[in-house]
Image (cartoon, rainbow over all chains, first blue to last red; front, side, top):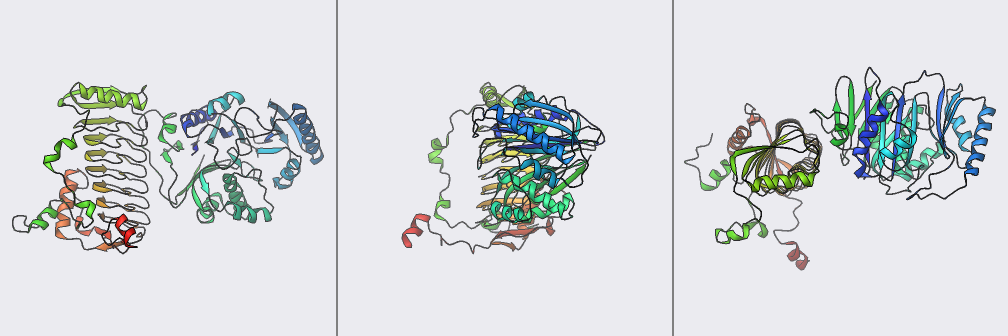
Amino acid sequence: MCGIAGLIHRGKSSNVGSELQGMLQALKHRGEDSTGYALYGDTDGKNFIMRFKVGENVGEGSSSVMEDVSVYDERKKIVDQTLAEMGAKIVKEERTLPYSLRYEIDFETKDLLDFSQRIESIPGVEILSMGKSLEVIKDLGNAKMVCDRYSLDKLVGTHAIGHARMATESGVDIKSAHPFWGYPFSDVSVVHNGQLTNYWNNRRVLENKGMRFMSECDSELIAVYIAQKMREGASLEEGMKDSLSGLDGVFTYFVATKDSLGMAKDTMAAKPLVLYESDDLVAMGSEEIAIRSVLPHEIDTYDPFDGEVKVWQI
Amino acid sequence: MANIKTIDKKSKAQSMGMHTEVLTGRTQQKFFNPDEAENFYYFGTYDVDFNKRTDLDVMNMSAPEANKEIDNLMSQGYGTIVIKNPQGKHSLGVGILNKLNLIFEGSLGYFGMGSCDGPIVRINGRVGWSCAENLMAGKVVIEKNAGSCFGAAIRGGDLICKGSVGARTGIDMKGGTIIIGGDAGAFTGFMMQRGRIIILGDVGINLGDSMYDGTIFVGGEIGSYGSDAVDAELTLSDQDWLRRKLKVAEIGEDFDVSKMKKIVAGKKLWNYDNLEPTEKKGAI
């Protein structure tokens, strides 16, 4: 059934890594096959941050195939070469796990499509996120396990969205885990709870327009759908409103950009969402207990109505 | 206001809010028989004293632990229990088949007060999905907002939300009354079979979709009507009942009920011609 959570601080930064961990851990009963974070950290905004993987977590419950670490090393080497060929300079490099890397890159571009296509043309390599603030971290296990594995609890930023996944229609692996990067848009991410029934029809149309899909998870469609609408000139809110009729099925999803956070709920209101809004904080989740992990005192919350789209700025 | 002393028995019953629907289905003609009272006895009910009051802090309890402790307190004769720090936990207060004055100082998660029969409950907070599902009797008052499927399949009692509620309020309800002080979401009264829903604010799309019977009163705007939901005349008896019900519910007492819309089933979707499904099958 999956659980989603998100929060945005307005006018200030906070320890969003730790806060989101608490929210997602409160929702772990909704699924703990994998957990993912899209964190918008405080940065100087000069360099791109690229989170990418060169392999899969093949731990317990994974549907991925075991590969030797030397294969990961080889893929990493090709990524480094490709970046150099494109004139992208690696400023900082972190290898948290054998298959998971974080690069800070000095690179000038307005369209990441060509950049992303070249990196992902390397077999086994997937960009999890690309942006000047966004970092997508996702892996198998519940929120605390992933948070501890990647040391996310100290990350300071303005907003974040996350997902606790119970795998239903695609594999237990990182490529099917949420959040999804809004490829090829810098700093766009999506999490989703629900099922989309016109996935393949939409996917074929979007692939013909040059968009890429890394998994067969229906939720990835939302990220690509919104990204394509924005490529065509729509604002985030316009793209989200369009999705209410363009996407068929039941869904509640969040989209985040560098400076905003939005939610959309399908016209059947079949998937849950509880929302708390104040002047300096918006927090939302599939269940109220997620919000309670950051706001334990008595607060006013409500369920957004069917077909509702809301967007907040930092 | 209708003169209750001079009107006929049926109208009198209606004005007192006892029923408005003409029931023709065979399964609906079985009523409570005092000679069979023993069949209606619930095990695990207790004699409680409303003046005997206690607090219960459930901050560090799971829902089963909290519910077990409520039962334990009732067995000791406590008739008024104040629950502290519910913290949005799911399934609190379920299965209470007893008279009890229960107060929650905070919000509940999913399925709060489900399958209850008899308690009077006040929730000083919000409730999540499916609050008071299958309520048989009693009164549940929510001071703030409520999630979707509010009062799903209730059979009786009064369920009052002073704020707004999500989608599918009163889905499959078979009796009782639901009163909403604010707005209600889509598919309100979906497949309802009996009972009444009162919404003082606006309501979303597909109101009363595929309802079999029952009545919905709306004070604000209606997003759209569902299949077979139609307008009906708001009678003086209806207005009397609405005024009385809103007064008892301590909600919208000054609301002008004469301008409310009344929605009932058009009964064009009724294909059973008063036959039981098995009989219908045989006829086919």
